[in-house]
Image (cartoon, one colour):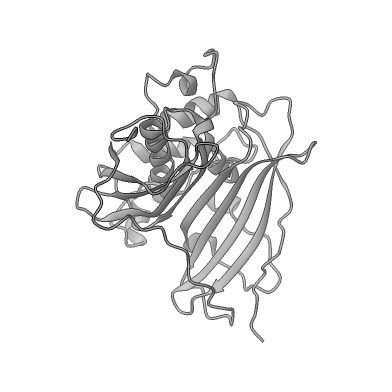
Length: 311
């Protein structure tokens, strides 16, 4: 009988806290610009939390202080799974569904992160893949604001007798079609140093010695920096910087990004808008050498601006 490896296991709910200052820092760290004061100025009449901020909450939880990244990630034992080493885990992909806009601060409210394992796949010698769904929930009303579907790859920790899992769904760029829009993001040595202050204090993103030990050749930028900065660029380029125009957003972490890399995102509109004006946009992110760093990019959004956006 195949070991199902903890699928269906629910972690204890975790309380979540964030402040307006956290909203401002996050927007700064992912590239919001001075023409987007609704993300950068707390007294703006339309001040908003950038929608993908939810990806920070599993790291930050309630702490306003620097945390020990590895200690904070010590996992709850999961029935049916061997112990997994959180020091050897890489992000696979993230998929967010935006159901209600999170307020710019949690003050006066009680939010929780409720996480369930949706699948664990034994890839043999390469490692184990764990899929989870984490809901950001108003604990008093039960309303779900954001669904976070994540995939983590535990390097070299396979071979425990589980299922290999289904083939993943892919959203490749249309062959032979010119992108409908593009934008670029020039990273620097300071990019991960600023981004980590949101609450993702993995030493790999600041300590070159650790990066050498893990065979990355030094510091690498948080995968979720590239993920979130691309979400910002996509919303600004095609969605008029309006969070209401983004319903879903996802992509896969394909290869590491190093400080100083220039990332270029290409976007394609792939179908007709639905009755509410939302349509599918697929995208791909490459570095200056043409290597794909974010793949399987897909957003469901309203297109209101951008190159060729009003065809």
